Length: 354
Ligand code: 5GP
Ligand code: MN
Image (tube, rainbow, N blue to C red):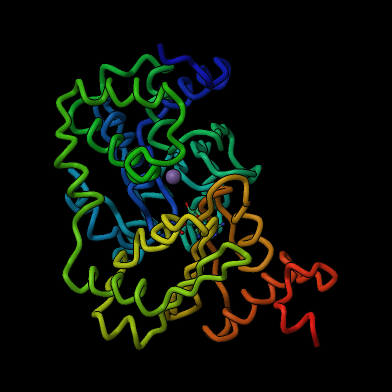
């Protein structure tokens, strides 16, 4: 039994908002992932089946790994078609904001979205959402925004409109945001939702292979190189650091999305509880962090890297060189794990004799 977790008053309000409009825009965060695109496409599809003029607008390009999703070509991407993105946002009567908690996460779309006085609905699972939305459906404990879209549709009594097509999009986001149900995956209701989606004839094996297990040879070689040559393990602090500079990325013909999943790999080592991955992008050093247990990497990203995220998966940006970013990382280690010289177990025998 899938329990209703959203307050009925919120659902009633959302219902009234949807009933009263025709033009609906759905938007999601920069560098969209499977959850952002999956939730946006699924909601868009259901709203169209309800007779609405719904359209998805993204701030930037959709990664290659998601181009297999149905109707992905109908998405308006701001960086490719600025005037169309501006026009549909300006004429929207209702805007859904999916899979992000703060307006800067939609980059250049933010002033357009806020410039339209129409109601804005947030559906998201990141912590501390900004208080700028008219309806807030924010559940940081949820596995994914796709899970939340299913729950919203269930409470709106619209499950009948989730067809095979929409189910495929929702399952993609649930799979990608949980590493194919390997983390954030303890809620038994997730499997009830999955079963409900599977009954709509989704080909799960195909979906997994398309969304999570398709890599170019260059991409596999780059990841192999990163793990073999560029992974540094700090035993005492139980952390692994991987860095890739622009030359290295060029050598492996790097395309966006090619390092997706790399940051999770060192967590497989028993002595590693958290991982930091730094990649030199055109404008900044992109920082990506993962952890296990209650080591909060979102706090580190918020404090040092202009970012944020979830307790066990977070990211941010560093403005400076890769060397400076690594230096900052090592300063953070000194701050978090100071060496206590009064403890002899931190000293080698040699040092104690001297
Ligand atoms: P990834 O490491 O896959 O890029 O991001 C993991 C999670 O960290 C994302 O789901 C998102 O919640 C968060 N995140 C990544 N980059 C940023 C960023 O620049 N700013 C903020 N606030 N969160 C980020
Ligand atoms: Mn998500």
